[in-house]
Length: 211
Image (cartoon, rainbow, N blue to C red; front, side):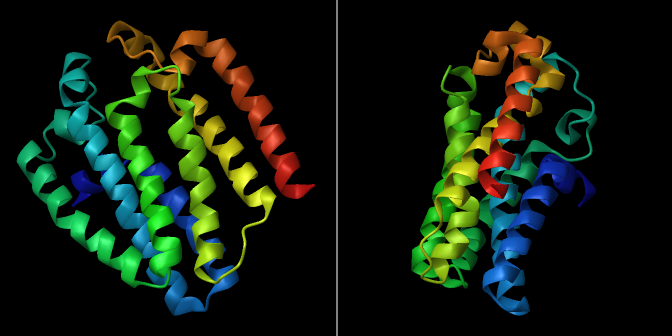
């Protein structure tokens, strides 16, 4: 179990799930809000687990022992089977739960963006795009589930902070990413440029949300 949680990139997964719970509690009562948070958590598992499976050979090449697949805490077969089991459950909870047929597909679109990043966009100059779309969708899908039109600050603020998170997230492995031919936008502008962009975007995002 510990290995599966680590493979989900548990820190970011916990942050995203907590944010979703806060928004859900604003629009819904406690029980539906917890179900929404569960659906979000399951979606984050899909993104994290698919990332570790896709990156296995590269993680092995760079001996990233903090990754549970590389350290031997779990096997690829276990992670693959867990991913297959989670997929239908995530669909059911998000579509037939409180998010419903309005908010559920939007959240699942965000999960699709995360998976698309893992397999394609992380190599492209357009690498921030999936983050922008997914982080814009996360709070907005909860508002939509209650027939509330998401305000502009929710869409735009989420997108801006999502892109900022992208630039911060790649810093720790940037040099190894470049060696592996991973050429997302942060890798192209370097560490100093990425830090500067992340700070500017965080300030801009805060301004949009709290203006």
